[in-house]
Amino acid sequence: MNCTVKNLSDAGAKLFGDNFLDIPDDFDLLMDGFEKRHCVVRWRKLKEIGIEFV
Image (cartoon, rainbow, N blue to C red; front, side, top):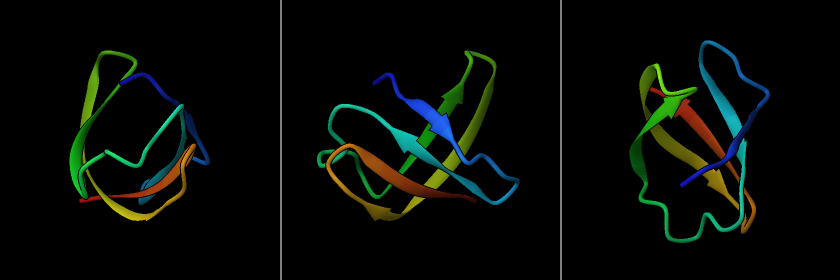
């Protein structure tokens, strides 16, 4: 799934996309095709999601 990363910090980020309702509660985020970070969902809406890096 493609998304836009906003509010990026060392602890986490806010992601914007088309539909986050089917995203699992934890996943790997691949940023710009280089850096992979494991994430846990802290909150979600239809088109945005708050994640914490673990």
